[in-house]
Image 1 (cartoon, one colour):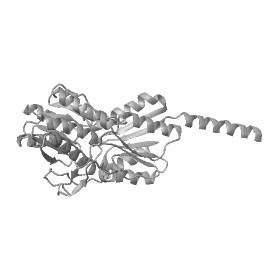
Image 2 (tube, helix red, strand yellow):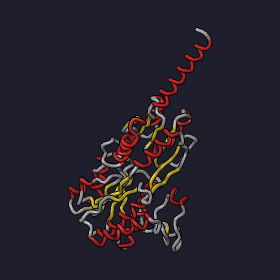
Image 3 (tube, rainbow, N blue to C red):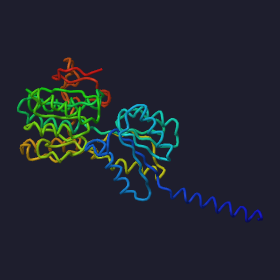
Image 4 (tube, rainbow, N blue to C red):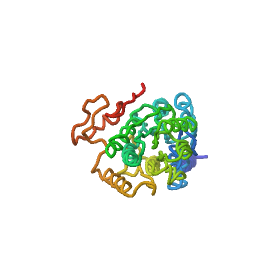
Amino acid sequence: MNRRTLFASVAAATLAATTVFADDPVKAGFVYVGPVGDGGWTYEHDKGRLAVEEALGDKVETIYQENVPEGADAVRAITQMALSGADIIFTTSFGYMDPTLEVAAKFPDVKFEHATGYKSAENVATYSSRFYEGRAIQGHIAGNMTKSNKIGYIASFPIPEVIRGINSAYLHAKKVNPDVEMNVVWVYTWFDPAKEADAARALIENGVDVVLQHTDSTAPQAAAQEAGNVITFGQASDMADYGPMPRVSSIIDNWAPYYIERVQAVIDGTWETVDTWGGIDTGMVGIGEITDAVPAEVKAEALAMKDAIGAGEYHPFTGPINKADGSVWLAEGEVAPIGDLLGMNFYIEGITSEIPN
């Protein structure tokens, strides 16, 4: 073989290899804290994954691992996903934050996206939703509908995301019903149907007739249905199987547009680190159907609040608002600074329980 033939052969082989590489689909991985059938948080993330497949077709391949505990197990799962050839990995629970950073440092060519966290890196982006906007609407409905004036809240972990939701729901329930009390039960889990059901039953036995939750299963709805005359709200997903009672509305997390956009950015070679905090305005936070169990006037007010939040005309944390210790947090007309919301570690005035350490 002469030199010209040799160079031509090498060039042809290189072009072929490049073409194959260019045609290879982008591999997108998803790490889930619960099962895809939880009916709530993980279910909606997996709907987003499936939407990526539908939108991007043969340009993408998706993989996922469900029921991954936060901590060392997460490091192993994320590492394995990176080793399997994933180009972008979405880690979808707060407790995956440090594991994501740890693995990302070892795989600088892989893109990572962490949900609900606040730490980023050159190859790690963060994304979350302003769930507290939906909690304000739930609180408005809850305050109007409670007959016992006792509202219960099943809380997962004492982190700002969860505390914001408790405060927002209570604040808006209190605005329409000054006699409202908020009872909070901490279950220290995102997904554990048995614990969630027990928490709901304990609240109901204590006289609560409205149950809100920041946990992922439909167990609280089942417990409320069992008890009768108790209303609930879908968490992360519509949970419409329990409508029109006890589930009277819901917060719906819509991750699909974000996932499609971010995977497309990898395909296009335009991906970069961002910090996304979407809300009702972007459609990342949706409000499920408000059922006919809710009085028409209350439903109309709730929808008007949703529109006002979405249009930027109303912020759920607008003063005057005091902290639980009586000190002034926001003056009349003052809107909560983003830093205060992101780091929220206090209850507002009127919630008498303590936030666990």
